[in-house]
Length: 308
Image (cartoon, rainbow, N blue to C red; front, side):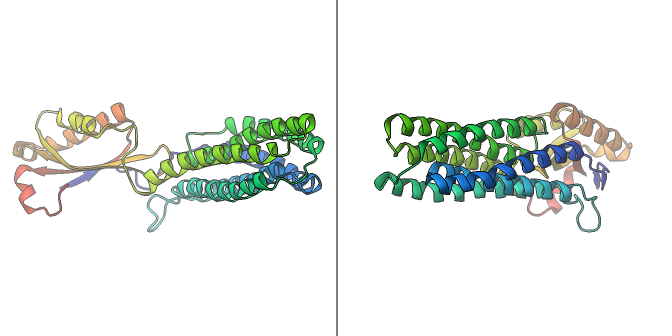
């Protein structure tokens, strides 16, 4: 006897797409304009730190463009075989952001090590001037995206790109000052390696969180033994098995399970009231609105295969 919550195609979870889209576009245009100028300055000054920041900023632009694309897909209504719509596009975008941070970080690390061994001439004044402008631009971009819904991994991925770029520019400012004062050009690749560490840290966090969703692990803050304990509390509930909890997209946990009831519940019509109680429990204690329960008598387990 299968009974579930009938939300069907009416999902309204996730980010406030309209407002977040405006924030993303504002940050995208700001970073794109500065990136072009930074590439010119990097080649003019011979600075790897500036070029690495420009490369990271290119990944920032790509990350925000991907986030905008994912928002557009996620807004599509559920239809046909796409019963949850395209909501998981946001998670794919977050994973893509993590991968680009990882790849760009590795490329910069290799070049930074090479320049530590064979340091080229670097124009410290140009590095410092561009880096100071970069700090200001990234502070504004980070402030814009901080106003968006960062509970979405999609938005958080774009935000982490910008935040690591901001830290990178701060490191480049320090490198520019060191080069101007001491002439020690190895400060430039060292600043690049600091950026790499920050990029790899952000990449790990994004890939870890998006991987949990894509591999359909239970939400990290969901205590499954506690969920089971709550589901067993109502009178007439004998057992709970085949309990599965996963996340469709950010802020959209989903649960399904088999609930064994006493035989009397099916004779006296008490089962629907228990279903309401179980769903209210999940919503109230664990903020799970999308749930499916299979209510079954005790003897039904003998006819099931592959129980969990």
